[in-house]
Image (cartoon, rainbow over all chains, first blue to last red):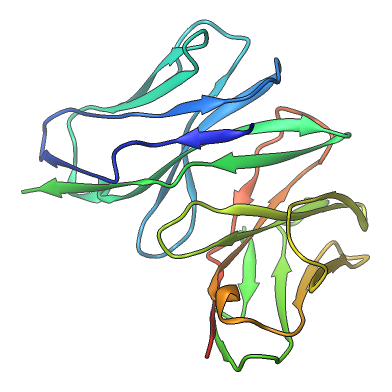
Amino acid sequence: AQTVTQSQPEMSVQEAETVTLSCTYDTSESDYYLFWYKQPPSRQMILVIRQEAYKQQNATENRFSVNFQKAAKSFSLKISDSQLGDAAMYFCAYRITTSGTYKYIFGTGTRLKVLA
Amino acid sequence: DAGVTQSPTHLIKTRGQHVTLRCSPISGHKSVSWYQQVLGQGPQFIFQYYEKEERGRGNFPDRFSARQFPNYSSELNVNALLLGDSALYLCASSLSALRANTEAFFGQGTRLTVV
């Protein structure tokens, strides 16, 4: 089965603090990419960070970093120095290539609230 | 540079009607994908088009169809609308459908409400 599980429907973090969003996935594919997307009220999905499954080194983008555990099929997102603008829905997703094309499998999302 | 543009932004339709949603990809992008995002859920893959051909289809009924035009814009059509079709429909464009490291860029979506 191709699934992504985000077990935290909602998380809260104090401004300037650190928060970790959890994600697990299930795929039989060996070649795939993992993503975290942010969806603010404007509805547009914005790429936060991505990780190639064949790379062991965890991806980092400024205040955003991931903890990728391939064997455990776990892909958590850490946001450091949280800012009010980080408040949004966060979706974990992986992308697989099948039949010469690709598609994204998304989780159900985690709503992040940032408290001033 | 313009990003992925979708029209209309909001739409209200009656059950049984037909709807057409439109998407213009980023200039130079040849692949367009459509996703349905029901309230409280993550986006679900509907279609992918590349070079005007359907390259992938998700688990949606035949009431859903799409096409891609020579300028790479795309339409998503839904016939015989049901209340359950109410959702945010997202379009994503990318340079290619064939390269695994190709990044997709999403539009702001069309909010469809079926009453």
